[in-house]
Length: 269
Ligand SMILES: C[S@@+](CC[C@H](N)C(=O)[O-])C[C@H]1O[C@@H](n2cnc3c(N)ncnc32)[C@H](O)[C@@H]1O
Figure (cartoon, rainbow, N blue to C red):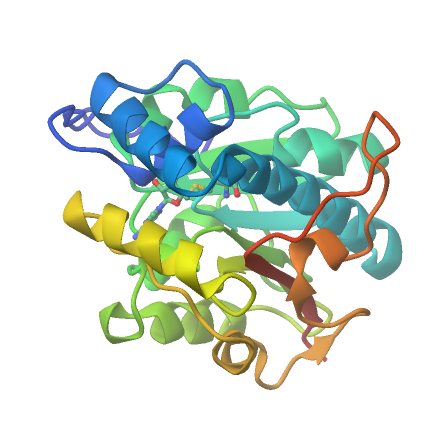
């Protein structure tokens, strides 16, 4: 752990929060009626697709994490916008391939902090930590994460389903630039983020429903998503719908259908 966090901030159950709505999509129990209500509305609006997208996003996280460990040799992860613990968590995926992997999770939602213990039990050879911070405070994140991660060595920065909650004029690019800028050569950026490129009508309806509940949601085009990877070398197959990022069959032997999130991994040389 990166040290005892200060007093737990209050959990606001009067309006939906992204981490809890996402937990509801994934069938978790760490959500409140207000989150379930928005989750159900979005799901009904999209013909039941939102939970499938959430599950596909988790599987992308696992595929990309395994690929990073196997292909780049990276053993350190900084996972910003980690979400409420959901098995397999990123450190479990990374440590299943490399038991000495070190992972720091970061989130700003008090409910994630309340459940952070579940993120901290990894292998004896590796290490995990949790930092309660806003992604828009990248310097603070780097300072706190340095108690677990060695930033002189390569780190994989995971921004999985985070950046669509942060608008460009709210610092999305600044945080990526600052975090990627602090990483050693050989590091990488693993990202998934909402797009309206494939299914504009449904995605715009979903964005409007979140906005009506007071939650910012930004859908970015392929070119806009690509801006986060400027100066990085994309691993194959580049920036694609995350169901097309090195797909594997699910436990029933079925391939995933199209998903309205881009996924990509870029290497810092
Ligand atoms: C959709 S969940 C994704 C969780 C996990 N990364 C995954 O893909 O399965 C988005 C997470 O980002 C967090 N988040 C949103 N805005 C944030 C911010 N400004 N700073 C830190 N975390 C943020 C939310 O609290 C939530 O846990």
